Length: 362
Image (cartoon, rainbow, N blue to C red):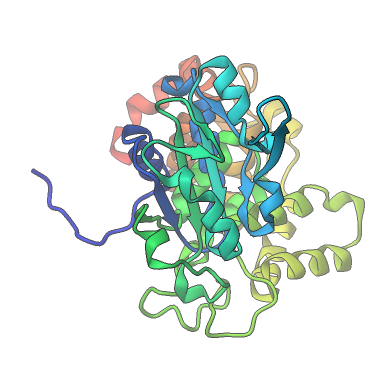
């Protein structure tokens, strides 16, 4: 039996698996801002075991008023009132289709007390909203920030006692890079930047992080800082940098991820703009310039993962063999993890030969 660490945090995937396995429980998922708690819904949408479920869009509990949950409808023949739930909950749709539904009460700790009370019946084993009971097997969970972040999340004891409280960890830099490579959502410059600065994903609660200039810390007055969420926003700016000047680029990044991260990322953008073109690499892999700085090598490797295809993989492997072994391994490991590029990599004879000759690097 593996050693159990009591009080440890879960990854988002582990939290989602727990929620799926115990649908009769109601879970409160707590974690630092920008960690990706809301993105857990994508896991439920994409998991094969959840194909029969309807998945409601995130319910922004902090913006709800009582009338946004359900409204009374008068049955004049019976002279009674019934509750009609808001369509965003997908409850009526689920009942009509006899399918379970997944409902995420996002930022539940910031909802007004009357709204939390109105939503309490959703937290019971036999969940309902108003007078409508959800189909059996329906999943309801809530999210909130940590109390130490001081952003207004409050719960009364009778609310917390209805839920199983789990805390999720921030992703590591390596995990975030893997996600960025796999989805293609993150510009290679930003991936390379994160690889060089893994402290971007440290927690303000970790020992020795009080002076970390990149992360959000409630002990300091901050306007912008790095998180997984703001990093994705920064990538959107970097990807379109050809549309505006450098001063605009720096200002946009500063307002998204903070001044320290913006200035350091600027250096990686300079590396990208100095690299040889993709065409020159593929046309002449044996003679095209190989960058010598670690930052430039990192930018090139992460950019290649997104660009390589069945026609370019062989010449790129020829080019890659001129790099230091650590960069060759970085390319091989990350391209093999990318579900969209695996077939390209493992369909290449040169990639297979590289794996055979460099097992000690993996």
